[in-house]
Length: 445
Image (cartoon, rainbow, N blue to C red):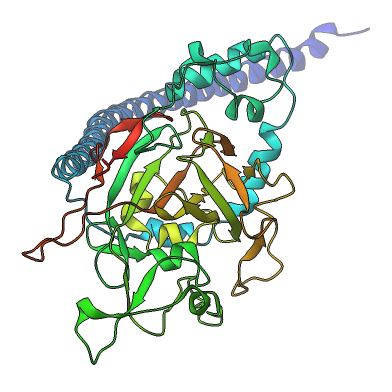
């Protein structure tokens, strides 16, 4: 006889225990979940409050930093405007002063010659025909070039370099026909001009710093100078001959600067004048003959290639003397004449039409360059190369500076021993001049 009830009793007992245990676990799990939910809500509340505080802090911090940055930029801009206004006022009064700065020192560390060679290579790349007008119009818009004067259609200039040295339409630059005038050889801005009178024949770079003409042209220059004797009056100096000038050696060139140190003070002969003209990148870049003259020789100084803008003029010493330049010397109807074409950054290449084989901005063979300049005498030695007023002479690849040094007629001393120069400039400092316009005139007595 089988008792199913006895077999089922343990089962009922087991199920009751399991249900009780399961209920206990369920209640415990529910309690834990409630605790976790409570803690989570508390943490969320704490996190929310902290995030709110952080967001409030960031909200307060961000405007503060922004305002400080704006104030700083505003102060820097105001300082720049103030400095620019001071420079503008000084320019109007003609009292720009020499002020060296850290940037000028830093410029000496840059490989400006290599940069200029790279720029020359870049500008020589041939542009696609369809792109040329857009590039040249953009350049003209940026540097205020007058494209109406261009001799050829823009599509015919294969590269930027060809566009830089472009010719102008016939009659665009009429030459002053007056035989008693000296014309401007370039388009540009007049920086300095005047008569060389003081000992050393100094040209003012800016107020507070000047450079000597003999350093600019070279120690072997034919510059008409008279040696000042300390035992005599300064006005009665002993004149040095041209042969003595040519016998000067170049061992006096400083290793730190290519400025020539003359062993004895010298005074320029009466009637020696100068004019400095700056060419901007947008100007007409060809250089013409300022008068009828005979060019006897050329002198090439392989110097540095600092920029030639106004800031560089105010901050870099011996700027015209240290930069690479090509000097032409000769004579015209009134005596000595010299023209110095001074290079600059990205303008190391100076083309000389009367000497196509000349190459400028070549790599230096030595780190320092105390070697003398490369000189060339044109044949025949008695006459050299004859140039007429307005003839094309040279070209810059962008723009730079031309310095003219020349003799001009002066009146003979009168009874009261007063001397007045008959030659007079017809320009002012800061004037814009075009090639062919008169720089100065004189009248035959």
